[in-house]
Image (cartoon, rainbow, N blue to C red; front, top):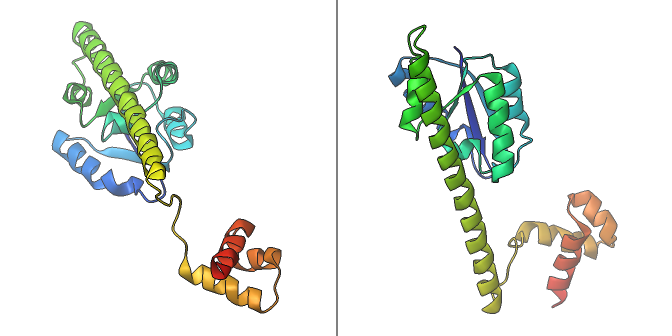
Length: 206
């Protein structure tokens, strides 16, 4: 049995390696060693995650897929989750999540020949995993809805939406413009969009 840890973060401002030490401490407490880490920046709502797929490709029957929490593995809608779970089951991989205590038993396999205990553990594990997967997806949808509602409310109140302007970039744009550079050349030189260049010029003349 090899323990393969999967770490995921959704956005670039989040650190997917944040939980590495936490998972290592958990494994140490359980008396097992993590054989490999698979780390990626990707949304849990995507099924086609390269590192997760690589983990499953390299896993052998009986290996453990270790995650900090079920929502690190999935925020998938039901059909996509069923597809991922089927692939995990086809590979004979067991999912252990730190936030799912019933799954920890996979780290201490039942004695050889004890098929009853293994079947009970599989049944309970699948049921709890399905429940937490559904909760993770519902939580994601709820947060998306609240975010959308917040944006609508902010717009109604006249808030300015979008990324704040970069003063240094805008100053460089205006300086190049004063030197006679075209909008396209400024965009190429500063490696920004022509829209950003136009906005900086417009802000100056406002």
